[in-house]
Image (tube, rainbow, N blue to C red; front, side, top):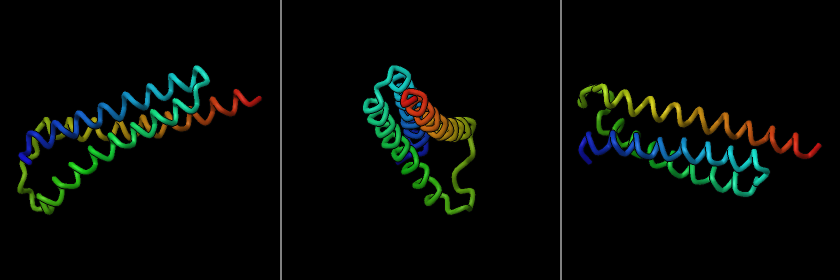
Amino acid sequence: MDLESAVMEIIINSGQARSCAYEALSKAKAGDYEGAEEMMAHAQEAAKGAHRVQTQLIEQDQGEGKDPMTLIMVHAQDHLMTSMLAQEMVQELITLHKKVDQK
C-alpha cells in the first residue's frame, strides 16, 4: 500500500469511528441502548481498520524515518487520536445515561 492511500485509509476509518460513536451517543440519549452498543461496535471495527494501517506504516518504517513525515500524515494521526478519545468519552456518557434512566 502506498503512503498516500494508507494515510487516507486512516483518515476515513477514523472519521467513521468517530461518527459511529456520536451516533451511539444519540441513540443512548433516546434510550436506545441496544442501538448505542451496536453503533459502538461499528466504531470499534472502523478504529481497528485505522489501527491496522497505522501498524503497517510503523512496521514499514521500522523507526528509521524511511517514510517522510508530512502534514497529511500528522492530520491522519490527529483524526485517529480524536476518534479514540471520542469513543472513550461516548462510552462513559452511555454508561451515565443508563444510570440516570435506571433511577
